[in-house]
Length: 157
Image (cartoon, rainbow, N blue to C red; front, side, top):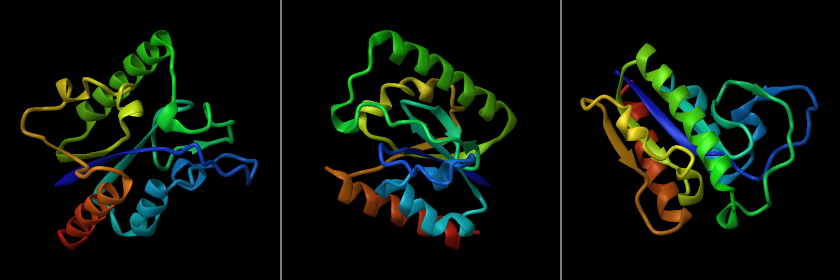
């Protein structure tokens, strides 16, 4: 059965190449770098990336360089209007995806500031789909938890 991995993008974005490249290659933060290491091996896992600039996008979706929003995303301040707009758009994207694809599990590793723009996604997820959140306090433990989850699902192929 298929799985879905939802991760945070990063304010660390590659400027080059100039032409559009897959989002998983454009973002260069710790979370995306970890997923990149396994990307060719996780054919049973779809990856979505959450970004305040691009919204919710597929890892393979080609994107151009755009200046990252506000530097440090831990201190990200989005207006209520922008959060509302992104949330509505992102939930619609997710709902359309879930109507076309069935997942037995969704794993979420998104920081609390970016979680706001997908807040309520669990309401559009079928009850039969397990939702797992990255566990731990801070990025290190959450990364270790996600890595363990990815490795367990590589073996399940």
